Length: 150
Image (tube, rainbow, N blue to C red; front, side, top):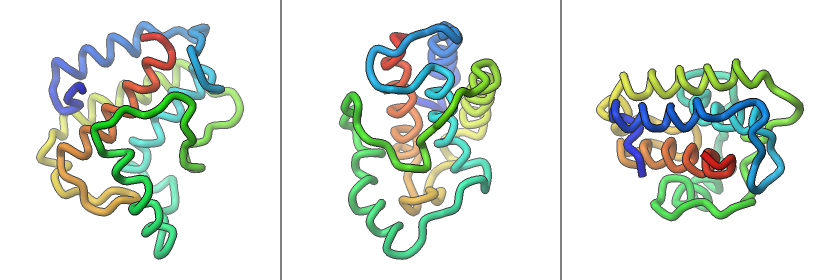
């Protein structure tokens, strides 16, 4: 797994992203490439914006109980696995805009560094270690880049 906080690893990830075009086809799943980029950006929106409401109470408890280990654990995601409703992207998106947003999110995350994320509160999972944050970002992005063959 790539280290989302390492400049060289982020350069490699960005090369993969930059090899996508608006015509790149998925190898599995239902999302188009523009939807995938918007979908991956949600993980960063949850950290850098207040765009999405935070789960509370019993809902947060259930998400933490059933999803945390899947999201921040080392085991790769299964193809065609379900996603949380907040990550569902409907309709066409602007490919170039979503790609730029993702590249900007990667730069910001790498520049802030691992120490910025250590014990930082997650939208749904509570405080995470820098390793868990790296897994959350890196595993999800790698899964979807593989989905589109890059």
